[in-house]
Each structure stands twice: as structure tokens, then as C-alpha cells.
Image (cartoon, rainbow, N blue to C red; front, side, top):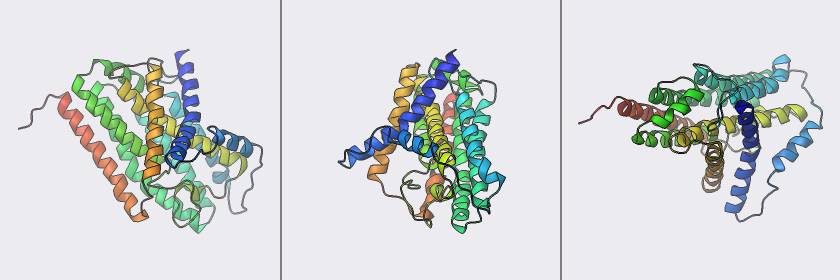
Length: 304
């Protein structure tokens, strides 16, 4: 029963996060902004439209939205929410979680290449490059959690965190920082990408889904929201488990990450494409530093 409650709350979180980002961005710009749940109205509109397929596309293009949504939803099932357990929990689920997210990305890359469009091919190549740079950071963050607790399952990791030494809290806060950066990369937000742009030569994620309409486009948007909620929940659980492990604390921390992303999008400009690789590699380097810090603290190694 706890797993079902966790899933319902996580789905609710996924619906709230885009609204929080939009509202923070509007307030930072001195605007009223759109309705808080405007993204849900947009999804409802898309669900009422049919899909149009190019004659150059095949089965991969048609399956990709369902694969992306299914993979992300399955990853969400492995996450506990505070003291509420997860629907799926087993040793090694932290590795499967990372590769389910990678599966969704791979499906979109293959679908973009199948269209035969040079623009979507460019977006697919950029997505593949950014994914290759970002995935090590996610695996290092997961490995840091496993190293600190001696567990390889999210449910056991966050339960064991309550027994960690107080100095490990700084490690969890750094993991939170790394994952916020990863959310920006994985969901194509400023400064890596701009979901509002329509310049094919500079887009990354948005250019890959240019040929999608109707229900398929709605599934892709929903998949992006679920991915944001999944990553934010991992970071929120990591911090919350160290001092106040309950569902409301985790939800508050996850929504706080949305507010941070909204602030970042308001005060930063989009990077030049040539700088994105360096930006993402910096995240991976920081994740490695955090992993080594956890190793030093876990084994009580004295330096100097």
C-alpha cells in the first residue's frame, strides 16, 4: 500500500514541477505568467488531436513515445518517497534506474534519425553526445549513495542513511547539487537548451520531436515531467533521509529544486553549443569528486 501512495505522490509531483518552474520564471521577470496548470491544459489539447506520420518514418518512430514514457514510468516505480516504500525494490535497482532513463533517450535518438531530416539528425547527435557525458555523473551519484550505505537498492539506501555520520550530510547536499544540474541537462533546459526556441540549428531536445503531433507529443511531454520528478526525488530522498525522513519533506525538497531551476533559467542565458560539452563534463567531474569524498569519509582516511 505504501508503494501505491508513493507512486501517486510522485505522479502529483511530476505534474507540479513544470508549474513551479513557469511560475518562478514569470515572477522573476515581473510577469503574471500563464496558469499554474497550463501545461496540463496543453496536454489535454494534444490528446484530442490525431497523429500525422511522414512516409519516411517507420515502426521505431511510432513506438518511441510509448517506449520513452514506459521506461521513465518504470524507473519511477523504484523510488520510495520518504518513509513510504517503492512498488519495485531489489538489489541493483539503482543501475536499472539509470539505464531505463537511457532507454528513453535512445528511443528518441533512433526515432529522430529515422525521420531522415538533417535537422533532427543534428539534434540526435547532440543528444547522444550529451547523454554519453551525463550518464557517468548519474551513475557516480548512485554509486556514492551505494558506497555511503553499503546498499544497492534505493529503498535500502535511504533507510540506511539515517545511521550515517553527520559529516556525510555534505555529501548528500553535493549530490543534490549534481542532480539539479543533471535535471537541466536531461530535460533540455537553460543553459544547456531552451525548450521555447524554434531555431533548428541550435535546438537539442526540441528539434528531435519536431515531427511529433497529437497524442505522441503529449506522451513525450509527460515522459519529460516524469524524468524530472524521478531525478528530483532521488536528490530529495538523499538529503531528507539524513535528517527528517518523511514524504512531505521529500516533496518540499523536490519542489524546491523546481524553484531553483526556474531561478537559473531567469538569471542565465543559454550556452553556446560549443560550451555545452564542457558544462556537462564539469558536472561529471564534480560527481567524481563527491564520490571520492564519500570514499574518504566512509573509510575514515586521514589526509596530511
